[in-house]
Image (cartoon, rainbow, N blue to C red; front, side, top):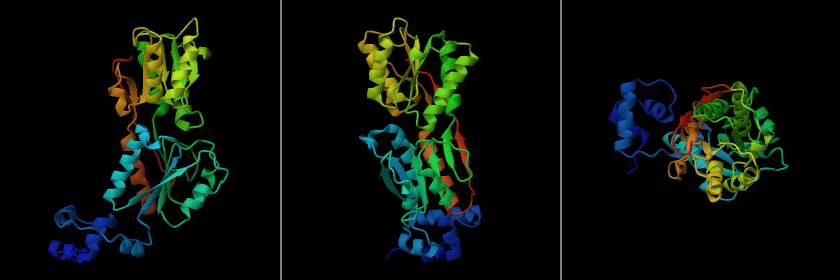
Length: 334
């Protein structure tokens, strides 16, 4: 027969309410008691009745994740790592995940709010949202539990988890400077996204701090796309005077740039050093291995999910702003 909360309570010599508190993470329970209950849950392979739980708590036990509808969406290691972090926390808390791929430029300003009000989810996590997205404000003003990842906005109802993008970009430029580079170029990401804006801002700030000349011809746009980055390097190759180092706003662009430079006969890092941002799994395996700024994408997903569940349970009040530390990973490309 299927194990019930009452069975767990009887074996643990506690009340069913105490078991419920441990499962739902609500209310105080002694550490020793909670550990005993969790051990019994694991041993007996207890599976909560999600329908009954949702009816009693007036929750759906579902979290929605809004992502942009793009080609090869699920091949993106950046999104995959964040979604993995989100999924792990939701599973630990007996929540399920619903993906909502949306068009980047939908004229329906109520789209996010309509998703929130369809009574299918208890909260929303939004990934790769643009800074001027008109669908955000109606969602924020509604007070519906939501959080954005790798995004920041200083408004009363905007909750976010972001990386230290500006600091990471400055670290990359300083590292190149310390290794003797004075002619440093930059490849922009998709500038409608806040993280792309911040990385460009960090590049400019550190270049100015180090009294380095900012050559506009050495600043190109790759839009967080490996193929566009490959093409953008063509503009640099046409120049009579080229940078000795290129900082790319993400790893996919850095990999595309490396391929184009190598095809042109340039050696990396001898002729041009390359640094990326993110530290996707592929960065270790390309040749030469990519020097990059690591942002903790899996951890950002976990943090976003934890914060959102606390917002749903009203354990936190908006706005919640969390910045994750970045780290320079030194490999062969710079």
